Image (cartoon, rainbow, N blue to C red):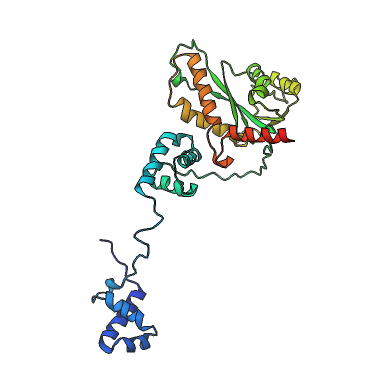
Length: 312
């Protein structure tokens, strides 16, 4: 049993009840300047101990808007199947099978169940004003990721495999490719074919300062193959600040999701199997609903914007 803390208000109520038992409720109400209903209500609770006059919880025992057991089972079963792709995807799937609560209500039930912990975002201590793409193709982030050796089950003969990722900031649509070396030749070749893979024209390419993208201006004025390809295609290259990967946050976060969804849960027994799995993962990502896209998928955003461009 929880220990009841005796407060001054409880002692006041006890004096009120003792006086009312001796002199009556009317006189007690006049003396202590309360109404008689207040006196009667506390006399009904009073059993001679000050603990009986403690404050009780006013929280309702039941709620007409409470999730039913069927709704909770629906949420948890859908989360088990699609939770890896984010709460937005879970919510869209639930709406398709008849769930009619708000997105916030669903997230609350997921947190109560302890299925997903909230990560506190770290505050930035540097002034940075990002320039976000205003339409499809306006700005694309590109980065390269090392494929974990733990999931490579075939003989690679010392080769390392890398994943090049391009993500359109406006639609969040991604293009992925596996390469065998981290070089400007591979990234330049990837950039040369990127516009046709996206299916819409590109304007600005944002990259970090890695040697696989750009040359160090303090070392040489010669442009890398990647920079030459961008110039040939008419793209503007935007570099992020050194040692600031969070400025390339969209592609960095997508790489984190790749590690969690694709590489942590699969083993690959040939290079062709790895490429096929990556392609399936790319299609799944581009057809997955996102909260930032108002519960639409990147592919749906691209189709909508293409239709608008056709109208004009």
